[in-house]
Image (cartoon, rainbow, N blue to C red):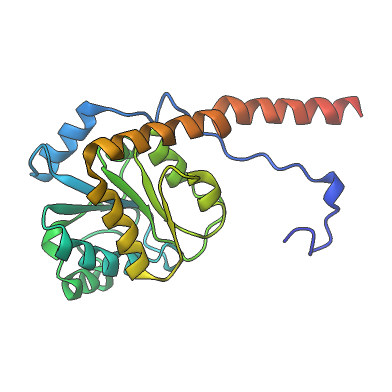
Length: 223
C-alpha cells in the first residue's frame, strides 16, 4: 500500500511488533481466579474476544458465531472485554439477546488486567473484518491459548498452523473454527497453545523487535 502511494521499496524495512513473553504467559492461577470472578466452575470452557467496540472488530460476527457454538456446546461461555463492551451497550446487548447467548456472555468493558484474562481463555477469537497486525492475537498465543482468526491483515501469518483461520464476515465459518477447537478437547488445545507460544518466541518476541530496531539504527548511522 505504501509503495502504491509512491514510497520507494528499497528504502523500506518492516519490523513486526514484538510480544513480551514475561508479561503474557500461561498462568493456571489466572485461569482459576477469572472463573471465580465470573461465577463459573473451574472446568468451564471459556471463549474470548478482547477488542474495543468498533465496526472493524465485527462483534456482530462474533455474536452470531457464539449463537451457533452455544447450540452445539452447551457448556461454553463467552468473555468479551474492551472499550464499549458493556451491558449498557444497547446495540451489543440486542445482538446477544437475538442470538440467545446473553446469559452466557460476560461483558467486562475496558480492563487493565488483559494478560490475566488472556491466560484464562481456552480459545481466543479475532472476528475482525479488517486488521493490520493484531496485537491481541500474539498476546493470546503468548499466553498459550490457541486462536481462531479471520483472514485479514497479518492474522494468518501470526497464527500459522497453531490455530484456525477463517474468512472474514462469515459467522458460520467462525463458529466452525471455534467448534473444532472445542471439539479437539483440553489436551489438544494445550498442545496447540504450547506451539503458539513457541511460534511467538521464535518469530515475533520483544527481544527480536528490539534487535531489529538496533540493526536498523546502526545501518542508518553507518551509511
